[in-house]
Length: 273
Image (cartoon, rainbow, N blue to C red):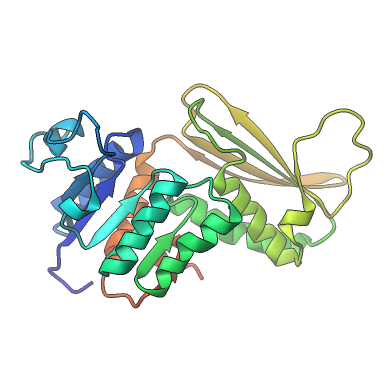
């Protein structure tokens, strides 16, 4: 992005918890002269259509009316933390109209994920299961730990989220597992163990275990344990506010401006690769 450029950002799913936090994150970027909120989109039939976006987000009136479709919004980049089907439709729209898109939606099937990412063939697309700086740094730490410890440890991933989260394990936990499996030359789909019950037998070394906790208002916690005889190493990330994810997504949206069409992720944005 060239100096002095202000990026017009639209947020879909504006009526949800994450939509409003994203608006707050855009407001911080606006104070720095980097971006402004130019579109606030909700589902058709929502009672929020026509309301002032700033007022709904708790930021004070800004004169931007909430709309019910992408066609009614003006933007350079769309930020989408909604649902798989809605995101597929939105990614296709952005690809067709040359709009960049930042996607934080989770819960895709393998086929849906491939379809969503294909929009990157025509427009800049940044997809991440977690946009916080800390989590993406953890991905690099996990690569190092897996490479050094190799096949001499057992690996377990435990994640916790609020009671409203609908997919499990979290997309971030799965991404952590993928980073470790790729580093060790394993296929996560073949070695992942999602919970244990009953007489499971002795643990097989190559497996990567996942455990899920849901309850209360936990924003997001992930711990990866590398367990050896006599010691264990734990890499943990704890989020105390959704603003950590939202500010990362806005950073990604600004970074996408001027990029070639392609599939990017948050580690590209942070130059961690």
